[in-house]
Image (cartoon, rainbow, N blue to C red):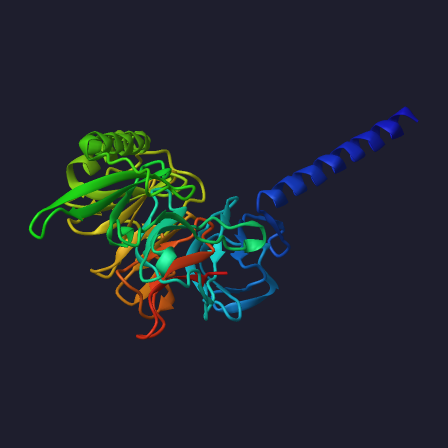
Length: 400
């Protein structure tokens, strides 16, 4: 009796062990190979997309499942494509390695984005705030509405847009703030407004005012800060310098030395994990500055820098990607930290940071190359006029 119990115990114990081993192997990406009677190593592809429920194609073959899903694949390189009706397609070659998980994180943009007016009184000379959450613009030839206005780009619940509000009103026979120039403070809480005041027909002086951006400022109680202008501007530059140095301090020392000597227009993504820059001198980024991560981005990288070329360095994965950009394009980070906005004369495009999946999200006229993403990443802000007879206004372009 004792012997039978011992045998049963051993059988149960071994059975539990085999089941646990099998489950662990399944979780690690292994799958049973009944032909060779073994467990075959695989990798896992987590196919996700925004919006969800996109069709998945692997090497041109459409799967029955939609995003989001997890797919077990044998190690190797695959061409993954994600499609959805009414949206741009997403395609990338992805390396699947055994026991590792790779995500697609595909963003699909509308084929026919919605264009919506955000202002109706006319808007000119818009300037985006340092944090990208507000824009100041001028209104002229609208009587009591003349002056400076603020449009808050942060969205309310349910994606509702906020109304613009006035911060400075031009006086009928006094200061015309629609003719002013303005500069945001680094903390986006103030604006430095500069206005030229005529003394005689041949002589003029400059007035400078610090304006609160949260409410309407009394234009009869403005204080001219021209005497403190240099101090104010120096203080702002020091603030910007401190913030930039804190970000640069996260870079590997070897890369920091290269960028310090031979790069310009250094801009960090919102999550500060990637840095956009333009090389001004030839250099070579050493390999393995950071310990490589498993399942890292396997898109072709370039560690040899060419003067005049623009690159993105990924701090988490120690990979450096060369961007294939039109010569005249202006480049800004998207709030997703995975995409870049390319602004050309008559086109706005979005491209992934590793130089893949470029999509034109808007083609048409807009003024002064003014195009910026909303903080949510769901829209693009542009300044345009729909006809020669109508004044320019601010419009949003839907990306979802």
